[in-house]
Image (cartoon, rainbow, N blue to C red):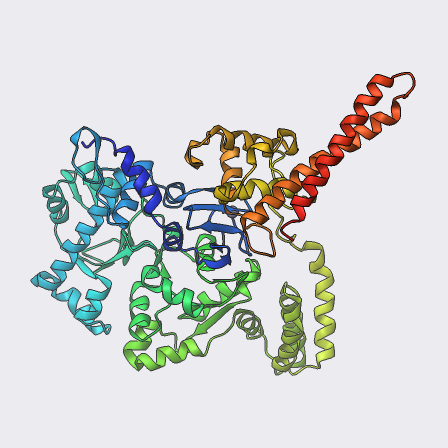
Amino acid sequence: MSGRIKADDIVYVREHAHIDEVVSAAGVALKNAGGGQKKGLCPFHDEKSPSFHVTPSKNYYHCFGCGAGGDVIDFMMKTEHLSFTETIERLASQIGYTLRYEEGGPAQPTSQRSRLYAAHLAAAKFYQDLINTSPDAAHARDLLTKRGFDKAACDLFGVGYAPNSWDALTKHLRAAGYTIEELEEAGLSKMGERGPIDKFRNRIMWPIKDISGDIVGFGARKLASDEEDQGPKYLNTSETPIYKKSQVLYGLDMAKKEIAKSRQVVVVEGYTDVMACHLAGITTAVATCGTAFGDDHIRIIRRLLMDADTFRGEVIFTFDGDAAGQKAAMKAFGDDQKFVTQTFVAVEPDGLDPCDLRQHKGDLALRDLIAKRVPLFEFAIRTELKKHDLNTAEGRVNALNTAAPLVAAIRDKSLRPEYIKSLSGWLGTETEVVTAAVNAALKKVSTTQVPSEAPAADAQWRPNPTEPTLMLEREVLKAKLQMSGLVFGWSTIEDEAFTHPAYRELRRIIDSFGTEPLALEKVEDDRMKQLFTELSVEPVRTDGAVSEKYVSSIVARLREVLVSRKIADLKSSLQRLNPVENQEQYNAAFAELVALETQKRGLHELSISSL
Ligand SMILES: [Zn+2]
C-alpha cells in the first residue's frame, strides 16, 4: 500500500488542474460570462437558466442558485463521487503530473474507484482481443457483419467478445493483480458454486463509458440459443460504485462535443442503433443502457444543450414501433414541458430500428428518418386521433374531445394557437369549434397547473445578493477577494462599515490571513466557505474599468456611508441635548459632528474621483 500524497503535490494539482475543463468534462456546457468568468447550468440543482459560475483564474466555482461552491477538487469529488485521494489522483493524471507519496510508497493509483476503472479497461481489452483473434468468436463476428458492422466499426466502439468459459476473464484479471473482491465489486465476476466465475459468458460486449470516456460497465448480447442460455438477450452491468444506469448514456463520450456544437441529440434504443447512427453520420446519437430515458438523463442532456441563458436545441427520439412511441408521447404531457417543447419524434413507418434501417436501406435512409422528425406534441395528438374514425361525424367529435385537452395541456401558451390550427386541419373541423373545445378544456386544467419553478430559498444567514443597502459591502468584499492587489486602505475600513453579520465575519476571516494569500481551503466554516467562493466569482458590478481608482472609490463610499450613519445618530442625540443644561456634552458632540462632516467630505471627494 502506498502512503499519503505529498502535501506539495496536492497544492500543485489544486493550482494546475483547469476547472473549466473539469466542469465541461462533467457535461456542463460553459459560456463566457465576462470578467474572465464562465457560466452554465448547475450540476447540483435543477435549473433552466444558468447561475453556475466558474472562475478559471482562481479554479473556483460557485452557484448563485443553490449556493454550492468550492475549488476544482471539491467539484470533482462531488460530481464524480470520488474520495479526496481518488480526486487528486485523477486530476494529476489529467494534467500529466506524477504524484509523489509519503513513506516512499509507489506512485500508483490505489484508490478503490481507480481500481474499478482499471479493471474495466483491462476487461475491455481482453474482450476486444478475443473478438479479433478467437475462433470461438466467429459467430459474434458474423452477427456483427450481418448487421452492417465491419472490423473498423467494431474497433471504433471497442466491441468485444466474452468467451464461453466459466472463468476466463476472472483468471486473466486475477493474474493481473485484481482481487476477487474487486472483481465482484466491479460487477465483472460473481461467486459461483465452486468459486468465482465470469459475469458475462458467450456474449458480444459493448464497453459503456461515462461522459469523460472511462469505461464503467458493459452491455452484453447473448449469442447462444435460449435453450443453452436462459439469460436475457441483453445483459448489463448491475449497479456498482462507478456504474449507475440512470446516469449513463451509451455513446455520450463520443457524442458530447457534437451535441453541444450542433444543439441536437438523437436518442435511440440500443448499442447497435448508436453505432449505426454514428456510422451514418448522425454523430449526436446516444442510448440509455437497459433503462427508460429518465429525469437524470434529461438533466445531462439539458446541460449539454445550454446556450447563453436559454436551453436551446432539439432532442430527437427514435421509436421503432407505434406502441413504444405512443407511450413515450403521452408521458410527455406529464414531464417537464420546457424540455418537451424541443422534443421531436422520428418514427420509422415499417417498424425498423435505426440499425435495421441502415442495414436494409443505407446511411441516407437513416439520415432521412432523422430529418423527417415531427414535434412530440404533434405526434402525441395525431396518435390520439388515430384511435377514432374521422370519417364519421361522431368519430370527429370524440376525437376532438380527446385531443382538445392535450392542446390545452401544452404549457407554452404561444404554441397553442398553432396546434389549434393544426388540429382543425387534421380533423377537418372549423377552427372556432376547436378553439372553443380547447378553451373549455383549459378551464379544467387551470385548477391543476403546476407552479412555476420556485427560486432556491436562501438560508437566513446568507445576505441577499441583490439587497441595495448591502451592495457596497458586497462589492468591497468582492474587490478584496478578487483583486487584493488593487485594494488600498483596506485596514482603514471600520468593522461597523459591514452591517450584515455574514459580511462582518468574512471581513474578520480575510484579516486573519494577514499577509498570507487568501485561500479557500483555510476557511473552516462551511457557510463562510460558501460566501467566500460566492464573492470570489461573482462579477464586479461596474460599467467602467475595474481599476485601482474604482476600488478606492468604493472603499471610500463604504466608509462615507458609515460616517453618514454616525452623523445622523449624532444629530439626533444633539437634538435631545439641552445646550444650556448639558453644555460640556453638547460642545463635545458638536465638535465631533464637525469632525465627522469634514471626514465625510474627504471621503466623498475620494468616492467620486473615479467617476
Ligand atoms: Zn446550483
